[in-house]
Image 1 (cartoon, rainbow, N blue to C red):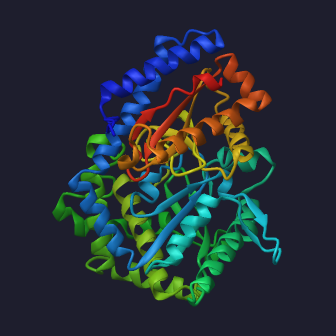
Image 2 (image 1 turned 90 degrees about the vertical axis):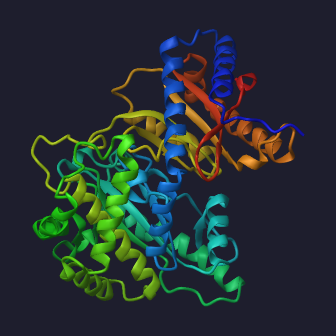
Length: 460
């Protein structure tokens, strides 16, 4: 059986060329060189990021971060909004699940009428964690722009909701459904259910800050406030390492600095956790979590503290905690998405890029996918078509063999997914007119490298 070499840039480029030629013939539109170049640049940029994240230096950082989690599997659920950079919020040390407004699609379990996630992919991920040696902590994020709430979550604005409404949805829908499913798996395995497996939080796209208990106002906790409170103390300590507040302000989003920047964030995090500097910061966080999150296990509390301390370290080095009136100094301050990506199984491309924004969603079914794409399009209304839509499916690189059963099943799955999108009246019309260019991809399930560009033009 022949092993394909999809990581070869020349082969990928040829696959894209043939697909776009065939796609253009089917819809009677010639895909311009400008649009071909844009698509190819997104793919090659994604694969460049993937190779950096798989380098020995970066993998060493990721390994250490996972150790600092202290025996907890950390999951983050957040919006499809491109202003939320997964590489900086959860990096490679946490799992990510992206849905509009952090609201996962749910169903009522027939046996007891309890809410559970509608996504089998998400549920099976919960099963794997439940059967493993780690506690689970899911942090479910609403998000906003604190400098301009009208520039907050597009999914919530579209339905006339605000931050409080978003947090209510998370607390009354997303968290109960995840908890019910995970509890079921624990019981099936004969294990004691955890009292709490998920908490709500707010993410500010202006400062990259995390806020706990936003609805409690005076008793909320903000990593941005804490960064500002202790920044002078941190300056005095880290100046010996030639680091001060905002040291990476101008270059943290530059791909060539991703590894050294991440290494410095980790080292500051370690020193704060070891109380080598600002010991009262860690003590205060522990007291706060003990007060407001009493039902978390010690391991879960350690993971939450790590997430918060790491975020403070990130805000400190980027200098994002001080918001100036005309600040737009980081690439995620305003919408600037270059593409859309959806995947019902596994991950999408683009979300680990430290500079380029991408819409990404992991819907439970084609109906959700269509709704997600329409939400993305509504936020792209300042851009001109054609809009690039990557239709993704994940595969382990070892399974990418010609005529293998795994490969054929995934190709069929991806073709069916694309077919469902085309069947939608609005999206199908936009695809047929060339306003949307769908690009079917197989990506490596662990690294998110694009392995194969699939020619599904025959389904259009």
